[in-house]
Amino acid sequence: MVVAIGCDHAGVELKRQISWLLKGEGIEVMDVGTNSAESVDYPDYGAVAAEAVSNGQADAAVLICGTGIGMSIVANKFKNVRAALCRDVYTAKMSREHNDANVLVIGSRVTPGELTEDILKAWLHTKYEGGRHDERLKKISMIEGTIELKT
Image (cartoon, rainbow, N blue to C red; front, top):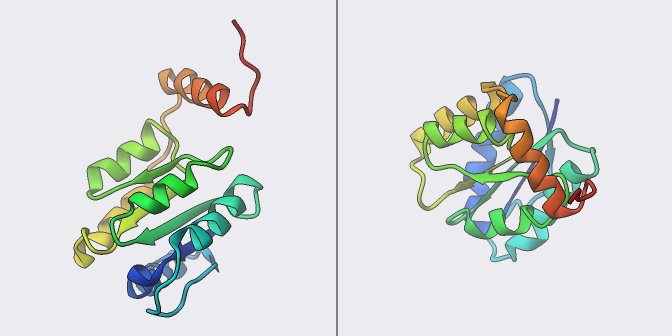
């Protein structure tokens, strides 16, 4: 499994921690930056990671900015990307079980560091339920134009 990881200046330290955790899980990490606390624009890094998921270069991604809101907005502009901003273990699990989220977004300034590992592990190890959720994901794909609308 390949996971792209990107952040803005607010997420550099958390990105290092998450990269280390991913590698500990045996996951290949595609680091798309940034690697400095110098102010940068989050769309520049979120777009690279989301594009990697969208085109199949990465299986999933983790994005980090101060609140996670900006990275969520950026990532969800890409086809076949379902980015979920998660601030607790429950939302991380539900984003996978019900929404088959392939991008995890974390806000470094609003999510306590000790909770990050639990969120990440829950997100990584929770499987998509399928069933009744398949039709809902199909509708999302229709909205984004990846499958044809049938009226």
